[in-house]
Image (cartoon, rainbow, N blue to C red; front, side, top):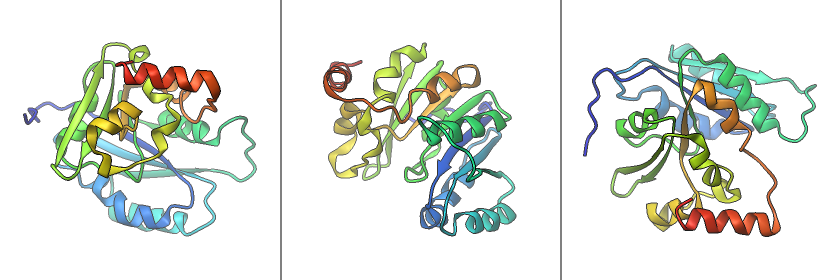
Amino acid sequence: MTMEHQTQPPVSIVMTVHDQAEALEQNLPAFLTLPYEGQYEVIVVDNMSTDDTPDVLKRLKAEYPKLYSTFLPNSVVVNPSRQRLALSVGAKAAHHDHIILADIRRTPINVDWVAGLTEGEAALVYSNRKRDRVTHVVATDLDDLKSIIRKAERHSFRDYWGTWFRKQRGLFDAVGVRKEHVFDAIRLYDQRIRGLRLLGLRLRVWMGF
C-alpha cells in the first residue's frame, strides 16, 4: 500500500564513505532526487578516502543543493571505530529531527523507502528490488531493534536472497531514528562480535528480535 505523502516530516540522510568514488557517481543522485514531499538533506562524511571521492563530492555539491559533505582528517585516531565517528559527525551536522543512517550501496527504490523510516521512534527498511517493494520494521523503542542493527552480517548485501532472507539475517538497507536517539543507534555500528554472543544475536534476530 502506498503511503500518504502529504505533510511528510523533514529528514536528514546521513552516510559515510571510504574510497567509494564510483559508488557515489552511480548512486548518490538517487538519494538527491527523491520524490519526497517533505524537506530533506543528504550529508556525506568522507572517511579518509584516498581515491577520487573528494572530487566527486565537490562536483555533485555544485549540481545538487541538497547535498552537504564533510570529512575526517587523516590525523584523527579513533578507537575502536572510524565509521562510528564519521556517522556521529554527520548526525551532529543534521538539521532535522528525523535522521536516516544510509549506505551508499543501498539506494532508495521508491518514496515509501524514506517515508516509512520516519515512523515510530526507530525503523529499518528492506528492499525487494525485483518487485519494487519495500518492507519496514517500525519500533516504538530503539531497544527493540538493537539486535538487528548490531548484526555483523549487515554489511553483506545479496539481493537474490530476497527480502525475507535478508530480514532474518539482519541485512537492512537503512536505519531511521529520531535525532535524540541517533547516537545510541550509531554506537551499535561496526562492533566486533564473535563466538557465543554472535550466535545469540543470530538466534534473537531469527526468532523476531
